[in-house]
Image 1: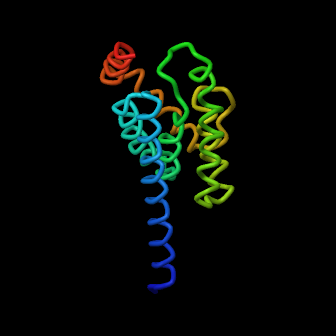
Image 2: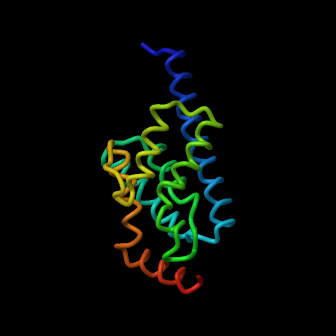
Length: 157
């Protein structure tokens, strides 16, 4: 039997998830412009792979994409600088404030923040979302397209 309540609840969840991804993307675009890194093409390459892997491994795409967009909100074009070295922790702290401001529930926050912190193996992945996000992020460095974009971006720095 069809339930309008369930339908509207599901629609509300879909819109909230879509909003979270859209807002995370907008924030990352602002931060990438401000920080002059990372390359937007690399971000979108990881996001594209994140969509693919989310579907393949049946994980919440909105959590993967939000994590991917927020993972480099604090970044530096300098290759060996302190910010670059600590960007997972710095971006996680930055993202926590952003997620709190948008009243994202603690369970989703924990998933997103773990994915951000774990994407360079600083801490273990606690969820499939974090594993998928980390692998989508890694893809940009193991694909020919990603490697070429990365080398080009290094030349611009």
